Length: 452
Picture: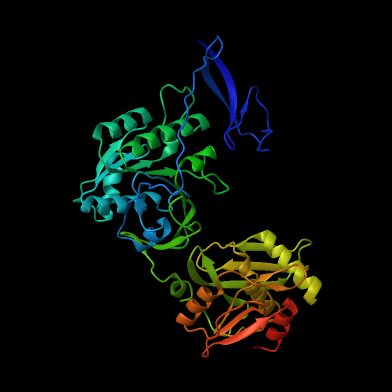
């Protein structure tokens, strides 16, 4: 056996034989880390394959039983509960509440006589015990261990040989002794995850991996980690707000982009059943620059307040400060307003905020953002009982969006009686609602100018 050195990109996982400042595959700088591997000096051994068996898609298959939690928001995100034998990866910023959420889940599962194993590579028993006491989980049967050896953990799961809830906090701290690289590197993360997933699926256990995130918000380690698991969740939020959003990015057993909303309290996380009412609770009347967007996150309709402030700029390059929305989309919308509606924004500072710390990426928010910008620059308050949804095109046309009925139903439930929507949007007309059809963005400008 001889030891060879290779350089692996920590962003995309590509292998390089020599160090470079930039990865040629993903163009990331300073992402190549040296790793040593054992390689046979002789030719690779060849193993004979075997014929695989095919089955018809209409054949009978094994059902995937689900294990429900006592949190409706978690069950919604997971598509009805955790599937036995599944692997879930949850990522989020440090201190956002990932460990608190999973400790609450294991506390509930242990109360319904589920075998719960909590393995931490970062915290000691005393640290986890302090958190469990604060959450009121003092008398539960959660089994805790502090270990970072993935071989030992996988062997323990196989020895127990029964369905369990297994929490790994976190996958970046795990290592395999036979791999010489340090914990957290691409090789270690990929190999440890594979070892744990195989062991968990063999016993129909539910495996939940906590993952660190990078500066740009993506889960640290190789991208293949997200392909290996069945479900990928992101725990989002701002440390300045007490609200947290759990979002499903990938789910083989349920819908994607579904969200669950929680509130961080001193005794743990509390689920928010009606987030629309919560996000609109601090809304003020007769204030310009505020518009209500009837959005859709997964299958859940949600009403969100969009706040805009447009002021004359004294800088050569006016500021564009955004919280919760895409800056590229705002630049496009400002260009359309200036070119098609003659609203000059190129010499203005623009501040845009999605109230409540929520992040939205849906194109249907274009109309609400445009309404908030027009309201602010003209200093005209919008109607307090109006919601907006619609996508804005580069020619200034308003395009229709999916699931308008769900958006309107949520708005009606919370007392809104005016719906501003694309003129080509087909909806079932409710007699007690007023519909304002918009064909072009210039129609919205005329509407707001008339103080409708």
